[in-house]
Image: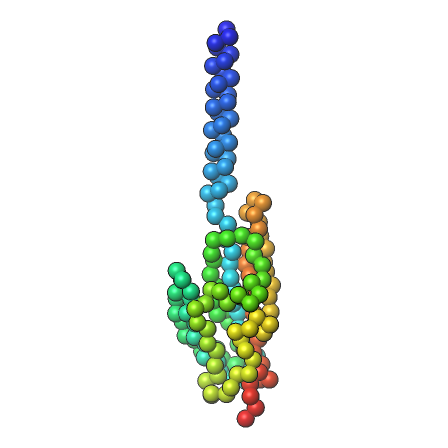
Length: 149
């Protein structure tokens, strides 16, 4: 009788241990992600030329024309991580290169490489107890951002 109850207890402990390992595996199998979204709102009367090259494993290169009074999404990417927050001066960390110019060669006075010229917000989500979500950066360019001719 004693041997039988020890065997049952041993099976219960093994089943509990296996259940715990399965539970941990399920929790860790979904990697948390942070998204980065960069938007450009061209409120000016000028046509803009945008060129960028992504950094690292996502070294996508793109060139586009942004028509006057048009809002576009420049770039979007998801990377492994958690706790989305404003990257402050490192907010362009997903870019190797970013260039914005007017097609008519007007000089853009606003320094789009400085974080204070972009607005920031985030869209927070949760994966269990882990914060995930998207960092959203918006750049607005208006007629006042160009040198008057």
